[in-house]
Image (tube, rainbow, N blue to C red):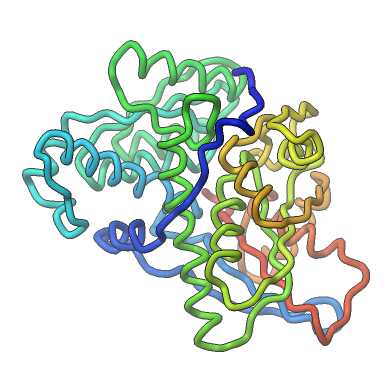
Length: 352
């Protein structure tokens, strides 16, 4: 898909975290993920938001896909019945009968497909997930066990995205992608809105303790998680920490876009940070990050792997993608222990 300069046609992200919170609380598996601390580098205390067990799926994307499914069911209900659907109605039988007629289709290189499949199963809809041939069979098995139809398409992620788009056009299924491109921004913003729950959970904990982080490290692929959390930090947190967006050095598409002033590809070799190895940014995520004052850094595959091993030893098994923010923190060589209290997000478990 060709990216275009969207400056004159922005789809701005203005989330309301109370909406996804209300819908997700209808899910029996919902609970805030834990916030813990540990010390590194001469006693520096690190806040750790641990997403490795989120809602039984083991990744932050358990928030985005299910909420987007619920939101799209709500939209369909409103269209057909001319009435709003309250979150406490989403699991009622008449709503599930409507959802049963809906199919959600997407491509996935990782956890987004699990989120969509989980949302479809929970709310009574169907899911069809496209995987590139390079995606491990174990991930296909997980999706199938969740009731999703799995279709293999192409050697690369971009090819599976194109196949999912063709499917939605030919079958009328709802395309529920987490990336954006010109003309397709609204539904991915629902996914991003789901991720704001993480920032809201953090805000509530920090307000209670009145002990806020000074630096926040946010790993990014297309940028949805980083943009959603950065937006909420700037919107309603009581302090203004420095926000550092972390990308693989093989795919720094958000940094490249920021430098170019327009959404820009960043081609490179394949990275072991597979969930973050995205060569094209989300237009909405990039535009959001441009509005909220962030810095960009990159990490290498070996740095991310070392960070994952470090977290493994601390009882927090994760992947290089899940550890990328921590990898960037470990590269910091100069800091004042009196004024440096970083926050990282371990975004997925080792088996996600």
